[in-house]
Length: 127
Picture 1 (tube, rainbow, N blue to C red):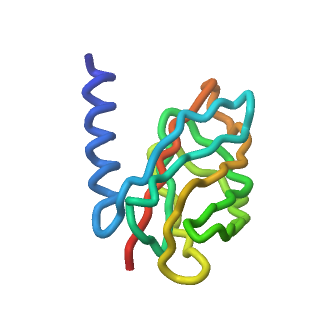
Picture 2: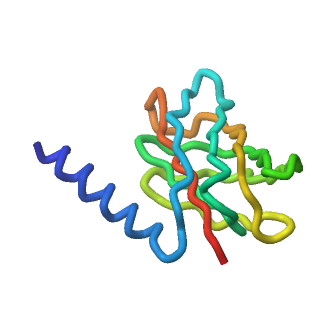
Protein backbone atom coordinates (compact mmCIF):
# COMPACT_ATOMS: atom_id res chain seq x y z
CA UNK A 1 0.00 0.00 0.00
CA UNK A 2 2.86 2.34 0.84
CA UNK A 3 4.44 1.75 -2.59
CA UNK A 4 1.12 2.52 -4.31
CA UNK A 5 0.74 5.81 -2.45
CA UNK A 6 4.32 6.74 -3.31
CA UNK A 7 3.72 6.01 -7.02
CA UNK A 8 0.53 8.09 -7.03
CA UNK A 9 2.28 11.00 -5.34
CA UNK A 10 5.20 10.82 -7.79
CA UNK A 11 2.77 10.82 -10.73
CA UNK A 12 0.97 13.92 -9.45
CA UNK A 13 4.26 15.70 -8.85
CA UNK A 14 5.64 14.78 -12.29
CA UNK A 15 2.46 15.93 -14.07
CA UNK A 16 2.45 19.25 -12.24
CA UNK A 17 6.16 19.66 -13.01
CA UNK A 18 5.28 19.53 -16.70
CA UNK A 19 2.69 22.29 -16.31
CA UNK A 20 3.31 25.77 -17.66
CA UNK A 21 2.69 25.38 -21.38
CA UNK A 22 3.66 21.71 -21.68
CA UNK A 23 1.20 19.26 -23.27
CA UNK A 24 1.52 15.50 -23.13
CA UNK A 25 1.78 14.24 -26.72
CA UNK A 26 2.09 10.53 -26.07
CA UNK A 27 3.92 7.83 -24.20
CA UNK A 28 5.51 4.50 -24.84
CA UNK A 29 6.57 1.55 -22.74
CA UNK A 30 10.07 0.95 -24.06
CA UNK A 31 11.63 -2.49 -23.94
CA UNK A 32 15.32 -2.88 -23.38
CA UNK A 33 15.28 -5.79 -25.82
CA UNK A 34 14.67 -3.66 -28.94
CA UNK A 35 16.13 -0.27 -27.94
CA UNK A 36 14.16 1.42 -30.73
CA UNK A 37 10.56 2.56 -30.38
CA UNK A 38 8.10 5.06 -31.85
CA UNK A 39 5.71 7.50 -30.19
CA UNK A 40 2.88 8.43 -32.57
CA UNK A 41 1.45 11.93 -32.18
CA UNK A 42 -1.80 13.19 -33.65
CA UNK A 43 -1.35 16.24 -35.86
CA UNK A 44 -4.54 17.54 -34.28
CA UNK A 45 -2.55 18.29 -31.11
CA UNK A 46 -1.30 21.49 -32.75
CA UNK A 47 2.08 23.09 -33.25
CA UNK A 48 4.97 22.99 -30.81
CA UNK A 49 8.36 24.68 -30.63
CA UNK A 50 10.07 22.37 -28.11
CA UNK A 51 9.81 18.85 -26.72
CA UNK A 52 10.89 17.16 -23.50
CA UNK A 53 10.71 13.66 -22.07
CA UNK A 54 9.67 12.26 -18.71
CA UNK A 55 10.91 8.78 -17.83
CA UNK A 56 9.42 6.51 -15.19
CA UNK A 57 10.05 2.97 -13.93
CA UNK A 58 13.74 2.91 -15.00
CA UNK A 59 16.35 5.29 -16.38
CA UNK A 60 17.37 5.11 -20.04
CA UNK A 61 20.25 6.46 -22.09
CA UNK A 62 18.73 8.31 -25.05
CA UNK A 63 21.10 8.20 -28.03
CA UNK A 64 19.07 10.18 -30.55
CA UNK A 65 15.56 10.85 -31.74
CA UNK A 66 14.08 11.47 -35.16
CA UNK A 67 11.07 13.76 -35.43
CA UNK A 68 8.62 13.49 -38.32
CA UNK A 69 6.73 16.72 -39.00
CA UNK A 70 3.33 17.29 -40.55
CA UNK A 71 4.84 18.84 -43.69
CA UNK A 72 6.92 15.71 -44.42
CA UNK A 73 10.22 17.08 -43.12
CA UNK A 74 12.29 15.28 -40.50
CA UNK A 75 14.78 16.37 -37.87
CA UNK A 76 17.30 14.24 -35.98
CA UNK A 77 18.41 15.34 -32.53
CA UNK A 78 21.52 13.83 -30.96
CA UNK A 79 20.57 13.55 -27.29
CA UNK A 80 23.40 11.37 -25.90
CA UNK A 81 22.40 11.66 -22.27
CA UNK A 82 20.95 9.65 -19.46
CA UNK A 83 17.30 10.39 -18.73
CA UNK A 84 16.78 9.78 -15.03
CA UNK A 85 13.77 7.96 -13.66
CA UNK A 86 11.13 10.37 -12.35
CA UNK A 87 12.74 13.45 -13.93
CA UNK A 88 12.00 15.58 -16.96
CA UNK A 89 14.67 16.05 -19.59
CA UNK A 90 15.88 19.45 -20.66
CA UNK A 91 13.73 21.01 -23.42
CA UNK A 92 14.85 20.39 -27.00
CA UNK A 93 13.95 23.16 -29.46
CA UNK A 94 12.52 22.20 -32.81
CA UNK A 95 14.14 23.55 -35.97
CA UNK A 96 11.99 26.03 -37.85
CA UNK A 97 9.87 27.28 -34.94
CA UNK A 98 6.44 25.86 -34.24
CA UNK A 99 5.87 22.51 -35.95
CA UNK A 100 3.20 19.81 -36.14
CA UNK A 101 4.72 16.53 -34.93
CA UNK A 102 3.43 13.26 -36.42
CA UNK A 103 5.77 10.82 -34.72
CA UNK A 104 9.04 10.51 -32.84
CA UNK A 105 11.43 7.59 -33.29
CA UNK A 106 13.45 6.85 -30.15
CA UNK A 107 16.91 5.28 -30.24
CA UNK A 108 18.10 4.45 -26.72
CA UNK A 109 19.94 1.88 -24.67
CA UNK A 110 19.54 0.33 -21.27
CA UNK A 111 20.82 2.38 -18.38
CA UNK A 112 21.76 0.80 -15.08
CA UNK A 113 18.55 0.15 -13.21
CA UNK A 114 17.70 -3.54 -13.46
CA UNK A 115 14.21 -3.21 -14.96
CA UNK A 116 13.10 -4.82 -18.21
CA UNK A 117 11.22 -1.73 -19.43
CA UNK A 118 10.68 1.97 -18.81
CA UNK A 119 7.84 4.38 -19.55
CA UNK A 120 8.78 7.37 -21.72
CA UNK A 121 6.31 10.25 -22.00
CA UNK A 122 6.73 12.91 -24.70
CA UNK A 123 5.69 16.51 -23.99
CA UNK A 124 5.46 19.45 -26.35
CA UNK A 125 5.61 23.16 -25.54
CA UNK A 126 3.96 26.04 -27.33
CA UNK A 127 5.98 29.23 -27.16
